[in-house]
Amino acid sequence: MACILGQGFSIASIAIALLIGVTIGNIIQGVPIGKDKELFITFFEMLNPYALLVGLTTLSAFMMHGSIYLAMKTDGELQKKVRGWINNSTIFFVICYATTTMATLIYIPHMIEPFRAHPGFFLLAFLNMMAIANIPREVQRGKDFLAFLSSSAAILSLMALFAVGLFPNFLVSSISPEYNLTIYNAASSETTLEIMLAMAGFGIPFVIAYTISIYWVFRGKVKLDNMSY
Image (tube, rainbow, N blue to C red; front, side, top):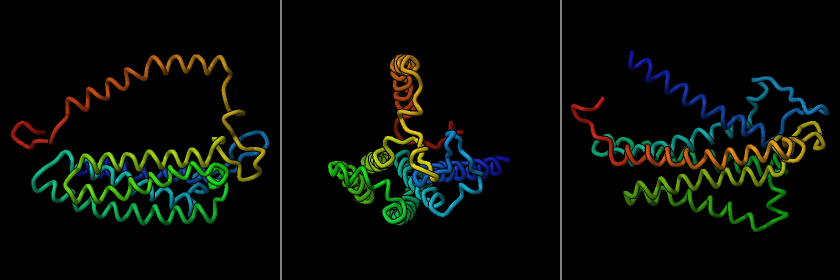
């Protein structure tokens, strides 16, 4: 039973990571939004080549990031095994990353326009590449925590590149640019935004404090002994 549950959890995790990337890929390339701002697309239409490529890139990034975290939390023979996962997942990620970057430059020109208009944003791309390049360096040195920080920086900078390339759009219409959903025409009223900002300002510190406390409680290596489960 435990084996079946573990396999089911693994399959579900892979599917979720892949579909998150597929969703991002469709947002990047555009979806059929009409004049009435309604979206008309089926699930299988979302599984197009570019979206699947972004999905694989997202999956590979999560695999790399998770493997580094496991190496940071384990030791002994298990850690040696996990380090092999880091090498393989990092190679997988770099291949997917390079392929997705080329595909975006060639087929999705609107994602490049903000960087042409504001060359300073190129610094984000440079920092992203440096963070990725530093991952195998830190793993080779046995600095798993620094590798984890580099992996985190790589993922955060990728998210920033995605946001800059898409701004000011939330969703790009593949029918006509005038049907795009932007931060302006899709925003709630000013009063609603003010209320949500106040709620977020009140709630986020508690979320941060809770997250820090959880990581503090479970800090250090995982120990396998007669008290483990």
